[in-house]
Length: 318
Image 1 (cartoon, one colour):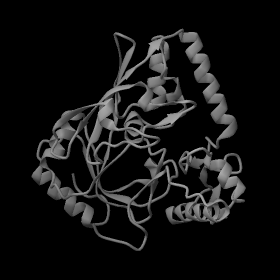
Image 2 (cartoon, one colour):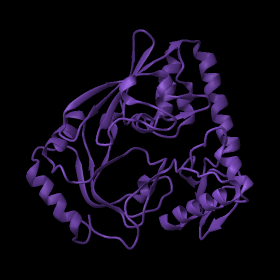
Image 3 (tube, helix red, strand yellow):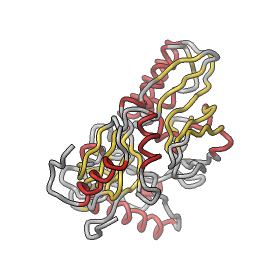
Image 4 (cartoon, one colour):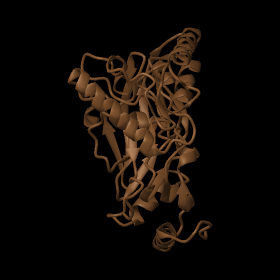
């Protein structure tokens, strides 16, 4: 593949990877725009974007790439803010080859890391498997749920996970039990270098109609309380112990606060919105202003839940 964009480090890195790892079946792209892959629709490019064909293709890539090369994995981009300077190294996007969903005996569901949470919830419901309904409220993929113990509407990944499969930086397959993941609230204790590829969930018997009705209620709740049809990134900050982030933000007078084309949602103030044309710096700066105001008003330090990746607009190189 030749570089279709202006020559730069991305093209050099792409050529180096193709030479070092022959036989890759997935797509490699230099200087690939990441804004279209993020729900905020903003941010700079990836030096190289790799979309592996499947587990074996990803393992081949990891086994052959330099150990010091920055590698970062993204899914649907629903909880992601790409900084304006772009992302150095390789961004790996898990696509269709990681989107399988299979119902197994014993009310279990096995899903690839690239499978959308909502599709896994629906497959479980159709099979009469209860317990995975909360996934309907998470607008991301199973890989993201594994990495951050994703949860919503009274449930979280740790409640239903049996085991997760991953690849390490040398391309070796690893299976981790629930205990080995060391889950806490919106946190996974597994090494950041592991790339999750699959999850096995344990549900319980349920009535498909009742499960689907519960999923519909979640859909309605999200639509009525969250800015789901805007350029947003989901919940911006984690809930501190004993408190709701949105309540603290409201108490600090931040509802509707703006910075350029970025705004704190009027509907749900733990959501930031890009009204069109906002830079990642404006969005992140607005988030930091919210954190400052909440700290000044309440003494509580809000922690980012949105994943911020890449470098600022004035920082270059790898």
